[in-house]
Image (cartoon, rainbow, N blue to C red; front, side, top):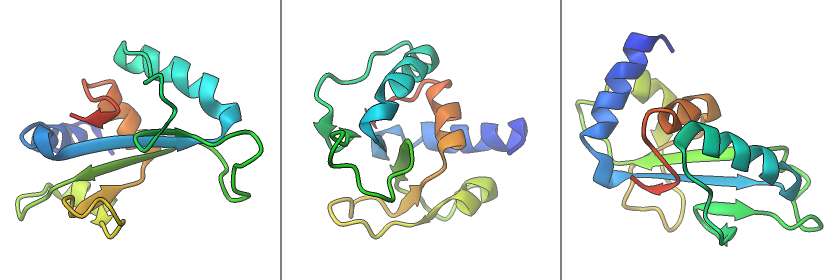
Length: 124
């Protein structure tokens, strides 16, 4: 995504910050790497409770076989004015417990860019 497209996405999400949620899930062995990158990107430390939904660390012996790395998820409420680049990244959200959000993005690169632009884990 070029900078101009990202800027339009950022503007759109900034106008809806009260309806934007970001969460992370990862294997235990990825925690230190994530924590450091998150601090460098946001200036914030990660939550101390790592078994909450917004920041979930699988225990070393419990990680599912298909959990290959860090997974970042962005949930938000979109309307008909959603910028095309954001709409291309997004998909309809059907995750149980997240019904208030109609869109979801699973794109680590995009979400790291959001972190570098003032976003953080949790509600923004």
